[in-house]
Image 1 (cartoon, chains in turn green, orange):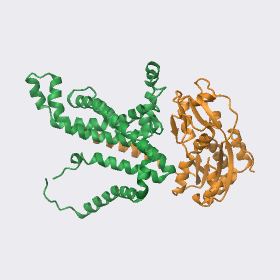
Image 2: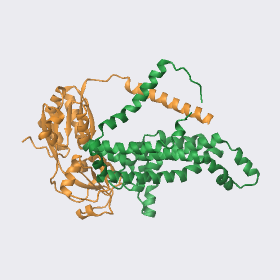
Image 3: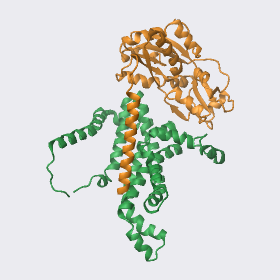
Image 4: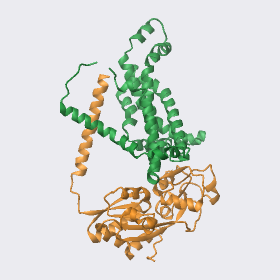
Length: 262
Length: 247
């Protein structure tokens, strides 16, 4: 891609130290892992339960993110929305907001006595806190922005020339979307979805504040790790390894998005 | 994309500047008189404020209180957090075999006893003991490993709990927000919080929780010694704790 640049030594030193800083915790985790008893640890009820809850919650959340996020990204990129900056800031907010704050806000919005939650309970007998659905809501809240900004960025860089052509040739807007826009957007959607899913999988703060902590229902892998760290550090390391492996599994197939290969 | 980037840069810059200004205004002032740092079980938070005020007014030393679940705090002590004293709801931590875990506390006191109480939101309806086993009601309790959770498990056995919280205080919050129908908390919590009521009339019963205080550094000694005084016991009793003189 580029020619071989001679790197200043000081820059190389800082870059090396930074890599070491990022790699060190992962190495420490591997070093502390109870390898011999790992299989037994991973077969434990609480680990299996947490893995099940985590996979279910993160995958349902990813599905919702896909369905809700795609139209939003398209609107943000292609429609002249009033107050676009404000809308975009709102969309990005859950990304920068501490998750615990997000969870607290969700509680006051969708909790049993929340702004909207009280009507959900009254009309539909639906309460979200302390349910798996609540954990999905928390995960969706924090994961949505990752998908939306990835897809919106892709839409902006690809431009709308082809769409313009299709529509002058007489295609109606929905056909343009279905036949032109979405097919070209698939790689970006995949990458955004992977990011959002990883974020949903790692979600802790909003989940514990909004959805609570119950094995088999709302205790996800991060919650189980936190819980185990206080009573059974070895189990916490084992759970961390599971999360690490799952995260790598997400990162590797999508790596070409982040690591431009020559 | 381009205007989006400069927009984001501006936002980050503004946020950074605001944070810096905030930091300067909050942390630039003098730290005040020297003091000690004390870890406090979350269910002792209110009474610890009063105890610390009382001791500060005579000693002239500041007391910085750090509250949290007892097991979480114990983990911090084991990890070498710089603290002078520790008030725990898990008296066994100091009083039985595992003393070496926390080094050699110079002074250890049994402080008081607290009883569990099944509470409901003050705005909710009265309940009865059978409701504890009603799966349609939202029940929250402390996690096992936390003293209030261990005591509750020992006393009530298997219950259809909907969420295990990290401290008694967290259970109190779920109830005062009316997000839960029933919660297992301490009798002192029910007395201290207007948003809480006893779910049904309950007599103090055990298994219950015994608080203990230990000094973890020489600077902590005078404060922990004060906690054994009659004055300290009066303050504990005023908050509803069962603070008998030491056996």
